[in-house]
Length: 214
Length: 121
Image 1 (cartoon, one colour):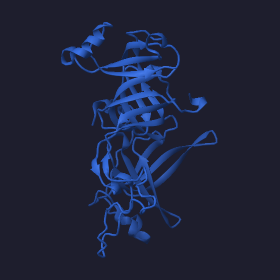
Image 2 (cartoon, each protein chain N blue to C red; image 1 turned 30 degrees about the vertical axis):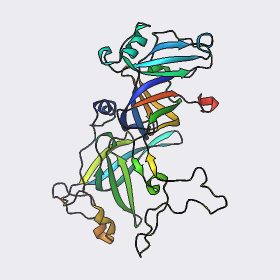
Image 3 (cartoon, each protein chain N blue to C red; image 1 turned 180 degrees about the vertical axis):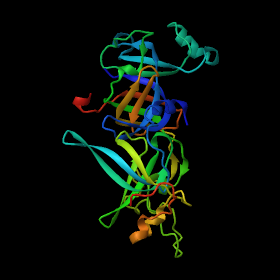
Image 4 (cartoon, rainbow over the protein chains, first blue to last red; image 1 turned 120 degrees about the vertical axis):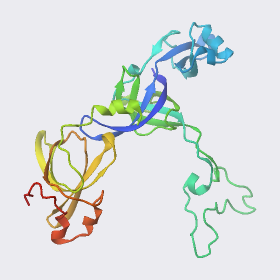
């Protein structure tokens, strides 16, 4: 089954692995997450669990959120996420998911919102070359041609252009779990993950990992 | 730094190694795994830079080996370092001694010595 946890990105550092190599890791404080709702084929037409991450006091949350949680006898879970399950979920409402569900050495996907860079031109956003700086070229960081003439008569889809860069939900796949601190609810993942330090991320078992790592 | 990250990396930080600074002539004893066996290799030279903080602090050692300048960068807290011996201490006026890269011959290994411990060289 796919394990999923809501977490908070703490930041990056390096640790020495068992072969004494210095490995870059992202530290994520994940869970403990509570199961707030169980959806099954009979009740909702599909199988899923809804998990919550305690972030806020109940008094600071909206009445709608509180009402939803009150129905199942929980409170203070401001971050809720629904996770699809292949089969009918074996969890019950109120069950706790922790980092110990993951294994060291296993592969995970991390979903987060990337750092927002605002409205950016093509050089920064798409790594185009840009023109010569001098000799009166008058073409420095411009976009260039975006297409042809009457035939085809329109700009092709996917044409790179300036626009909002970052601040988008992005998934990084197949990152290795380097270490797990069960007592501190911390999980150390090799490499970088999207978003600022302190931002919310979703960790789940890698969807496309090779069979032997699954 | 973040207190959580501090706590994780604290365990890896080594306090058992000899203190050394930029300009010192050092002999770095490195444990090397080879064909299932472990042996110790010594890399001797001058520390020309120390960079970074905490667990990712590194230092660069430069030596002239068979007429060719060789530099190695070690993490200060690396478990493969068995010990560090300080051969010579020196007085430096720079934090990074990159200028000795441009020096040729005898000058290339010479940094103003502090006459405390007589060098082996």
